[in-house]
Amino acid sequence: MSQRLVLLGPPGSGKGTQGTLLAAALAIPEISTGALLRDQMARGSALGVEARTYIAQGHLVPDAVVNAMVRDRLGADDAVRGFILDGYPRNVPQVGVLDQMLDELGWRLSAALEFSLAENLVVERLTRRAALEGRADDSEDVIRERLAVYHAQTEPIARVYRERGLLKRVDAAGTVEDVTARVCLALGVAV
Ligand code: AP5
Image (cartoon, rainbow, N blue to C red; front, top):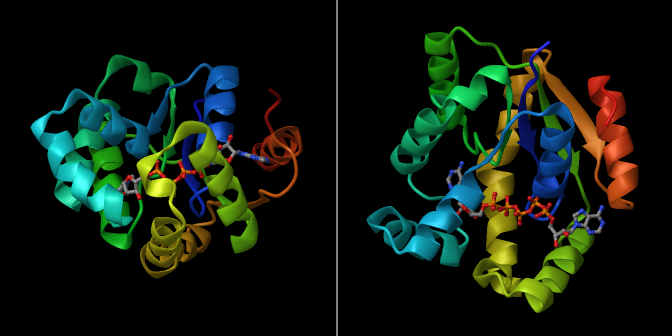
């Protein structure tokens, strides 16, 4: 059966890491809005230039920009097999837009996985990544802002999916392998 998944969770909780592993194991695309935006920034496109200001401050990029990007990506041939949305939707209005897109395509979500991780571990992981990769939004003050935006705008999404019976919570502490094992258990898949 096609897996159509949404990954939720604070910055640094491992959405990208687990999304990539799961996508490879299930042979479906991982659609990361953060990665798509960073790609546009690296190319210096008009969209990338617009997104850079928001991302650098830890704020959400305007919905219209992100919604259009996701609509376009879900229309690609490979999404027919299933997909993993990493970092989208990120606020309640985006949930409504995704619902509409899926209705138009005749698809339903399989599950929303919510990764939970204590804030000190978030800061530890992202500070380590800053030292290794130099991602511009991994400075401590921007991490704090991303967390504040997460609590205010993204956390309420979990309730929406819980009420629909789609939410599965995953403890994101421990090693990558530990978390993968919990994801597989939650979804009933093997990787
Ligand atoms: P996005 O790229 O989605 O950033 P994020 O949600 O802040 O998530 P991260 O990529 O920082 O963390 P992650 O949970 O994916 O963890 P990861 O696996 O990388 O978005 C960036 C920005 O784009 C947003 O702030 C916003 O401005 C904009 N944006 C994106 N989507 C948007 C939307 N829908 N609407 C509006 N704006 C949007 O892991 C983090 C680190 O920890 C890595 O170094 C990794 O190697 C390490 N790690 C992972 N797992 C473990 C583990 N188990 N143990 C130890 N280390 C681990």
